[in-house]
Figure 1: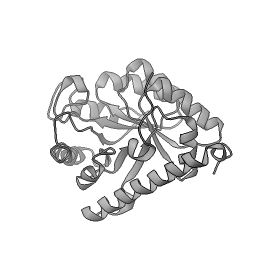
Figure 2 (figure 1 turned 90 degrees about the vertical axis):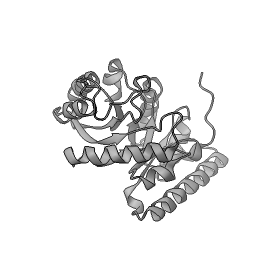
Figure 3 (figure 1 turned 45 degrees about the vertical axis):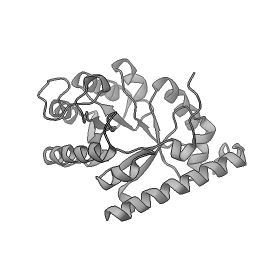
Figure 4 (figure 1 turned 120 degrees about the vertical axis):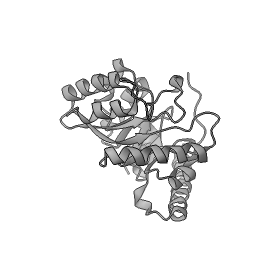
Length: 248
C-alpha cells in the first residue's frame, strides 16, 4: 500500500477490493471454461473519469495495468500517480489524434488504437523523440468496416486504413513495437458474432506477424465471450469501479 493509498476512504477501498475480487473470479472462471491458463489474460482497469485516489487504491490492491482514453485527462492523472511514487503500466485505449501523440508517448506504455498509416508516422516520430525504448502498439481492427467508428480494415488494400499497410508501417518503425490487435464489438452486433470474427482476423494476422500475439477485446459486459475467443487483455471499467461519474 502506498502512503497516498492509505488516505483513500476505507469504504471506497472496500468497494474497489470487492469489485476486483468479482472481476478476477469472472476472468478465472472464463479461462477455466475455455481451457486456458488464467495467466494468459491481463485485466486492464479502465480508470477514465475516476479520481487519482481510485488509481492509487487499485495499485495498492495489486492492479498494475491501467487504461485511459482521453489525453487531456490521462496526462495529468499519470503525472499525479507518478508523483505519488506509483508506476503502473498505462494503456491508452481511446481514439488517438496525431496532434496528441507527443503527449501520449510520454506516459503511455501501450497504445491500443492505432488504425491508420498517417497516425503511425506521427506516433513513431513522437516516440523516437521522447522515449528510450519502443512503444508497444496494438492495431485497432474495424470488425464491421464502418469508417465512422475507427479501426483498420481487414482485407483492404487502402494505403492508409488497410490493416496490412498499417501493420507494415508499425513493423518498419524502430520506435514502435507491433504487439497485437484490439477491437470493440460494433453497435448492433452480438458479442459472440463480433469476437468470433475478430478471432478469424487475429489468426490470419498472426500468420504474417507471429510476434503480435496480444488480443485486446472484451469489457465489463462481455469479457467472458472475448476470453472464449482468445482475448489476452480485457478492458474493465464499471464492473470494477462502479458507475462512472458524469463527464463535464
